[in-house]
Image (cartoon, rainbow, N blue to C red; front, side, top):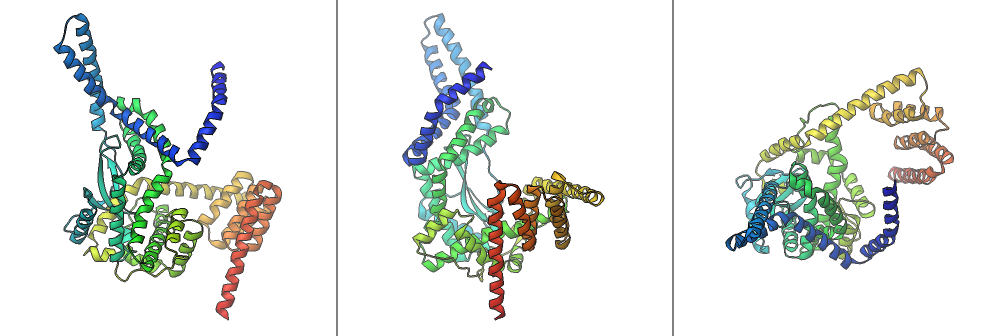
Length: 503
């Protein structure tokens, strides 16, 4: 009890200093840079301390052994020998710990000789070391991934990772620019202090993960401070890491004309939105009934893309990217558009010949990527399948109870949330209506039922339920009124559009 009281008093005494330090970090980029440098350097010294200690103890032991004059010198030699053994043991564990990052499918020269030649020319132009490997990945990134060779952010292995889906959204010319931009961003990062700080901040989580996977004495001694360093550096380096990502796009946009720059940005936004909002949800839908990931999302990606991607959806995603959210952060995208004096992004449709068709003669490598993806996704797929089966069993029990007796409280709330997942539209709406009318005194259930009815297109009943929730719980009022206003505006705009088309 006394210890807790003392800790509380210390926290009270330190609070003004902590608040002032937080304000300094928030206001001054120089203070953030200095703090980030100290944290990274401290982490490096911590991880290199076994090697440094081993070297110093060995040198000291050899020197004393050559100048022994009495028993005390013998004792010091023995002490330094013990230090050498201990630090040497830690150094061996340091050497055997290798951080890793998710890998893709390696591209061999015979699969795409033009791609390898293109990479060699770009690397030679920017004067940087060529990446050790070139990989296709399941995402939409095009980047050079740096991974620390040992658990210290100093020496790295580099891999060029190209998102296979992205190749279908880019023309051959746009891909060449994007590849050059990735190499230019890496060259700048390697040759600057701020670039190293940003890279080190991304390295520490990998180092922590590598140590967590090994039950070693080195991990026991270093994990706790390294976790703190990882959190601090990620927080302090957020601005630097965002700027480093932005450098790649800026290089591309500065080395092409305005029209091509606009098309390139539009393709990036649409590619990310299509994968995250439409394609992957469709693929993961199969996990509900299929216990193993047997789907092949890449072998026929080009054909599926042409069938699934609509011009209307692309325009909506572009508008949302400029106003609300995007894989490229809001600030980064708006800054890029401002630099180019571009007011709006426009969708110019998919390229007639994609970069993938230009670089690869066959889709065999996509079949390899399917197998690779299935291996990576298996744990997540199993989790989704088990969760769906559990939800279905829970829904069937709730449905049976609802037929026998009315549901109240948490049971009714869970039933409403699961109804849309396991019932057709009209039947689900009937459940929302029944649960709402039977629980008019439950604010949370009224709010949830109202939201679901709005999503189903029942504007009047949904608004009534949300209004009832706002009356019962004032904390829900702002959210309820915002949803009512948003859906009313959407309904008015949709009616106006239908009227104009009819006219």
